[in-house]
Image (cartoon, rainbow, N blue to C red; front, side, top):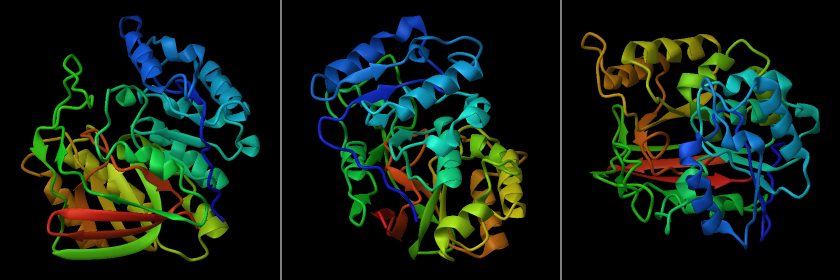
Length: 336
């Protein structure tokens, strides 16, 4: 049975950087986050948050020790890393999975490596969604702000989220809006060879650039997770591509197929991708079509997930009901 953390009022946020920390010239971002949350929701900030050297906040042991400490610290109610990075995979063999309490971890990008590994290893639900620095705005847009509603959902209850109206196609860190993001394009969910789709199953996923490296390791044993927690229920995979070329994207998806990750799969959701180039004429849309031809299951793409915000908060392990029609989508998550 999936274990869902409970987020109480006046929660305290643990900020640690198991992937990348924040360079000294950007430490002011955390000051902005403090102003947003405190005093109602104090921040407990780890040393790794304020350091960054050679593509990581600290050595793997230091990062893992701080993450383990924050996980087991009863005064910390939720862990939200500042952002993603590159080398979270280095800490996976140092996480104390046996003693992880039921506590929310929220993030995306490289953090999804840790999120998926924890859910697969322990059955504890984890939250794929906004990172901490993107919550520093004066306001949060209607999609991003739902992270708190989702994480406040009690076991046995459900929460509904809707596709956004607009999204941000390019980052403009130097000119954040009151919502942090600068939305410039209309959101339109799409599907391969379908006008209407409704699928149900357990949600799992993350950034394919990094979670593909869990295949064949003790931290990506999807088959064991199915046996331990799903009781024959299908999976809905949500995946987003940060920077893989279409050819590399295709190779990665075929690898996941060969590894059995798409066995008993109800459908696949793909987040919007900033990758806008082809591989010798082979496009991202071609990748979706080829995967559809391989698996013959529903494929929805350009959903609100990943590196072109805003993001729907998706819970690894939750029971999802996804509906798509006329360029829009509804995702219901049941904490059962």
